Image (cartoon, rainbow, N blue to C red):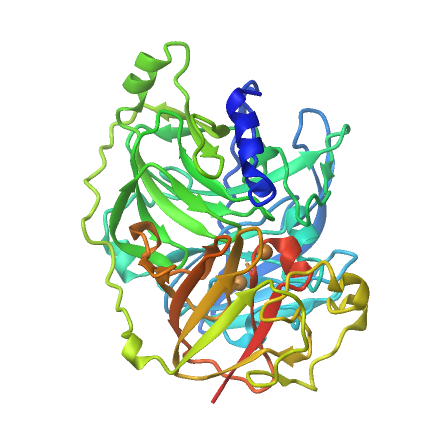
Length: 504
Ligand code: C2O
Ligand code: CU
Ligand code: CU
């Protein structure tokens, strides 16, 4: 370990304990990265029909060693769903696990009863049909379980997949878009393996942090990419770890999209920070990569996607994915200057500002905003407000997740500001279902360009107040709530989650 690691560890203290960086420096990256296949479908006048099977599997992560896993239609992760705005989609999802699960469409605007939350359970041996129109614009979404109290372990074992949306605007732009060739989804997940090469799940300081980084489930991954402009769709699919992504030669690249859509213009940068649940699309120009690399590292033609420790201490970085640029005849056109049009709401039209305090102790649920929903089962077995778990979960506005209680009631059609303040000693990625929101400010300062587009998950740092603005449209229900929660999956499972109804 270099002096920088030790320094980082020392400086980080308990507040930043979750940003400990990983050193994979002496490992050889020889495994071709897995690119999830596109999920096939049948089409009729009802729309597109997809089949997903949630199943147990076995996967060889480490050489000659197998691990038990979960996957969708396979051993680990799931196929990529690719649809267009305006499509109507139908999913038939069967659960072949021995435990209950759900499938949630992270980032998507769907009716509450189709959202795959803890209320839409799929019992072992049963199936669930979800169907809805694709209303979101072109973006990189994802799907994963949202099982009450079991999201962290189910995702850890491999349940996650990409959900890509195209639209007229995105198809009209000259962006790299050949799936698996110059347009690559990359799910980054930290893991630990035991001596037999099996996935090991252990919580430290209330969440999971692993020292091995998998990309699309591949250990020590390498990828051949054409030496031109390449689009990488980064998903932080880790349970808890936060990354700053960049390249080993510190080259600039362009961020072109946030969680829920394309940015207005490409944003040039050298680092992208992603907390669990967040996505970013980046375009990196590899046309010079071979020369640059051969000059600086004569023994290797590998470019590395790196991650760095919080605070960017020194040259500390860890290796995530090796890139081998390949000669190509095809040239890339310049990036378009204009990618998208984002209509921003005026704060003058805001109907309500809601305060979301993260941490600060558990109290009785406040009655001014919320209401009980008697029709929803109160699951005593996994009730996160039970006394033995009470001390472990981080409350939001004083309360932990309660299955039959909607903490907030929103009026359909309203524009709202949610003001999220972090009163705890660690950062939390705050996620809201149903909507895509825009960042107004962080501690009163305007959002940086890389966060100026549509978002559904936002990292809220220690002591920070983040204001987001959103509009609740199309879907309302008196009895089926949406969720908002911390996307550190262990925090979510321990009750750092609330529910809101959108009512007419
Ligand atoms: Cu990605 Cu409520 O989840
Ligand atoms: Cu979600
Ligand atoms: Cu959290």
